[in-house]
Length: 116
Ligand code: 5GP
Ligand code: ZN
Image (cartoon, rainbow, N blue to C red; front, side, top):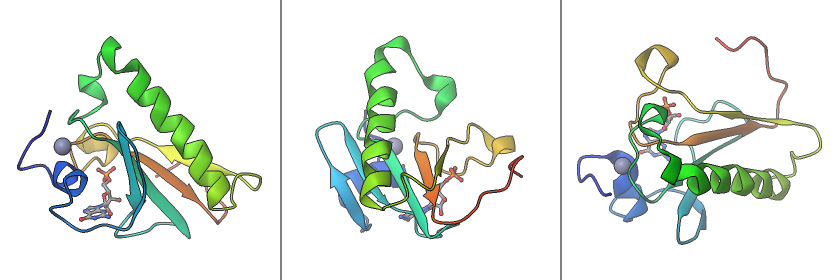
C-alpha cells in the first residue's frame, strides 16, 4: 500500500513537496517537475501500484477515476477542446522511471505521432 522508498508514495504523504492541483481520497494530481509540454500533469493513486503489469481487477475503479480526473484537469487547464494526451509508460523500454503508476496528462502544444 505504501512503499517508503517510492518517490510518489512520498509525494502522496507530503514528505516531498510537489505542485499539487487536486487531492481526494483515492488520487493525487500534481505538475511534472520536468514538463514536456505547457501542461504536463501527473495523476497518481494514493495506493502503491508499481506498474500496469501489476494491475488487478480490483484496481478497475482506480484507473477509471484517474481518467475521469484527467478529463476534469484538462478542462481546468483549458486544453480540453484543442486536445490533450494521456500517456502511461509501463516498464523500462517504454520509459517508465518511477515505479508507482501515473497518468501523464500532456497538452498545450501540437503532439507528434507516433510517439518516440
Ligand atoms: P515516467 O518516466 O516514469 O513515465 O514518468 C515519471 C515522471 O515523473 C517524469 O516525467 C518526471 O519528470 C517526473 N518526476 C520525477 N521526479 C519528480 C518529482 O520529484 N516531482 C515531480 N513533480 N515530478 C517528478
Ligand atoms: Zn509508491
